[in-house]
Image (cartoon, rainbow, N blue to C red):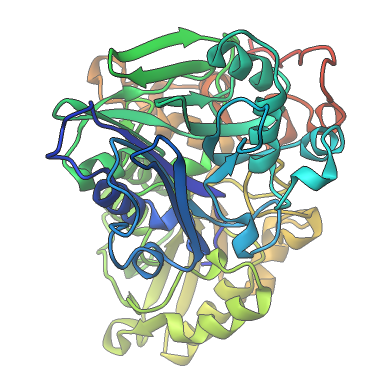
Length: 501
C-alpha cells in the first residue's frame, strides 16, 4: 500500500573489444527497465566514445521515456553503466540524476562515471570536506565520485579502496574508469549486487531480474566488502573488507526486490510465500477468503491460504496504469493516486469475512482508505495480516522512512493501529517468524530447517546474522548511525556490531 522504497537500481556491462554482437546501450536499457521498480524519478546512462571519453545522458522520468531510442543516440561502446533513481538524499531534479561523471579538468585523474544504490549516514560530513564549487548536485553519489578523484594511491584500485574505507552507510557501486568496469558493495552488504555473463561479456546489476531480462546467466552475488574489476583479461576479485556480520536489508525480500530475483541463495518469491505461511501459523482466524493487496503481497497471501486452508481470491485488482504510491516523493501525489489504484470484485466481497494480506504498514493512510472501500463493497469482517514486523524506527541507509512520527506503529499498540484503520483485527509477523520464514527458502534444501523446530532465540540469531532490520528494532542496525554520522576523512574505522550469541 503506502510503500517503502529503495533508493536506486544500477547496472554495468563490459563487452570485450571487438565484440560487435552486443550493443551495450540497448542491453543497459533492457536491464534498467527490469530495475524500474527500484526508482522511477530519473534514468541515466554513461558510455565511452571512440576517443575514450565518457559520454552520458540523464533525464527525468522512466527508462522508456528517457531512452525511447534504447540509448542509440549515445556512442556505440564496449562499456557502460546505467542508473534509475528514487530520491532519498537530495531532491528530485535532473541535477541529482545518475550516473555522475567527474574528473574532466586538467591535472586530475582521468574521468570516471559512477552509479550508486544506497545512502551514507556520514554524507554531510564527507561533503563538508570537499570544495563546494565542485558539486553540481546534493547527492551522496557525487560526493563519493569526488572523493575518489582526490584519493591517495598509485593505482585506481588503491584510490578506490582509500575512498571506500571512509564511507559509512549502504552502498552498491558500479564505476567505469580507465576502460575498466568496477563493482563493489559496502562491508555489510546492505544493498544487493550480482554478476552475470552475456556470452563473453559481463553484466553487474542490482538484481538478478535484470540478468534474466537481458538473457544473461546468473554467476554469483558480489560479496559484501568485495571489489570486482572487469577488463579485457576477465574478472578479478579482491576483498577490501571482511566483517563478521552481513546486513542485507531485509525489506529486499519483503517488498523492494522483484519477485523473480535471487539474493543470498534464495528467490524473493519463495521467501514471500514462506512469510505468508509463517504468518498463518502466528495469526490464524476463521474467515471466508484470503485476499492480497496486489502485487507484492500475492505470494504471501498464497502462503497464508495454503496453511490456513481458506480459499484464496484476488478480489482486489490493481490498476495496471497506476504507479506505486510510495514511489512518489510528494505525499500529496500519493494521496491523489490512492483512489485510482484499485478496483474491487463486488460479488467476492459482499457479506464476506476477509483476511487482507499486505507486506507492510508505513503511515497507514492508504490501508485505512482501502478498509473503508471494502466496507462500502459489503465486506462483513476485515482481518488485516502483515507479512513483516511493525516498522518503528527510521532508516538511515537508503529507504524512504525519514522520521519516526510518520510510522503508525511507532508509539502505538497493535490494537490502536487496528482501531485507526478500521479493521476487525490486525496481526503482524514477529521478528522470530521473519527469521524462521526466510531460512525455509534456501535454494540448497539441505540447509533448510523446519520452522516449527526453530525456537525464538535461534530464529532471531539467524535473522541477526544476515540482515539489517533496524527499522523494526534498533538492535538490527549493523552499527550506530548517530555515531558514524560524524565519521569524516581519516577518522578511526567503524567497529561493527557482532553477531548475537
